[in-house]
Image (cartoon, rainbow, N blue to C red; front, side, top):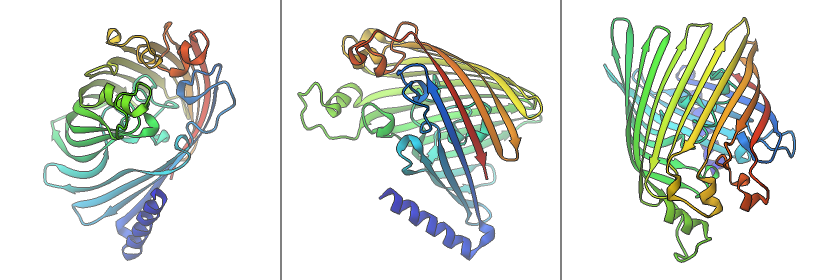
Length: 372
């Protein structure tokens, strides 16, 4: 069904292209990643079982169709190795530019962090991957709804407001609870740019509801029953702050988030930072990330509860090499300290793995990113 839908979209876009070549722009991006860890915990998706090519390899196409001078329609399709290369529509929205703001509606990226709009476009950021403690810890990437882009121009700076309303969706591939809708979602993202400095912040709130149907409400093992018992009808909120300095040579970035959800599902705080310096075609960098759950007293006993009460800190050293036009090769070594907890991985819970907690992981990875 998904492949049929994607084929139809491509056909329609190509048909539009035939009608007016100047009105359609097709661009693309991709990544080929490889890596391995020194144990089976699964940090960044990598284990010690084999050298893995199927965690960070993907390809995407974006179709930008100009309807008229003020409006356009954008569709982005991504095929990701993590999901067996099944094509997914990540964006599909219409936009209209008024005199002082732009309105958009459809399936959009949620503006949570600096790199949220292009987390799949590895070429767009300096590191091998956005922070696992910040970006990957929050698996929500997009929503269906509407937003406004409202720029406010000052003499030497620009302030951009982005109010958002809609319904968020966490895919079943990214959740231990299966597919979860975030109903009644609303929020605001703001970004201020002054020369080489960028500051941003965001606030979002929604109600979580698993989409599966409970067939045995008394079961303690059925995944759907457990999901409804933990997250159904629970209100949550997300707050993030970030600052970035980039003068073309020096790059410094710091971001932090606080996430709270009523009930037993974990609340957490996380911080990540990166320092890089461009030397010719190379950008070596140092990065660190930290995450800790803040409501551990609300969960005890079960393996699932232990995997949702954790702390971890990561340290990364890596480099980006822009060896030719529109292509970059990245190398990264990351050390992760799980602080005598599961680190957030069910595979690192003794009742599940049959072993003691793994204290740490060491992950080696490389990735080729490109755009066209």
